Length: 99
Image (cartoon, rainbow, N blue to C red; front, side, top):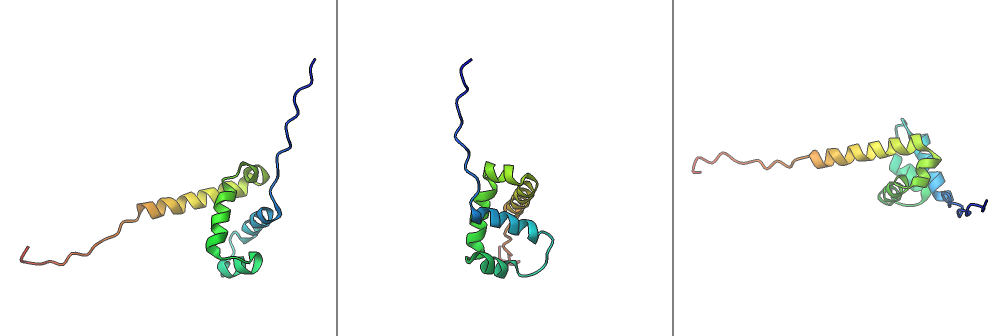
């Protein structure tokens, strides 16, 4: 019987990505200034952190590494996106009798 072809090993998460998942897991339920903790821990702005985190939690490797945490982060992100999409901007109209 011929040997099955070897699959190339799947690359894992790098140190930064692992640290980010660990940080998110530890931060769950904590109160405080997360933005300043992000800057202290990772050295970049909260906006950049969330850009990287969004890409990370869409990664199948991250999902396999910590499925419960990644799915929770995806649900939170998707809920925030739905809330933003549902917002409406109201324009106050003055009651003008000449209309």
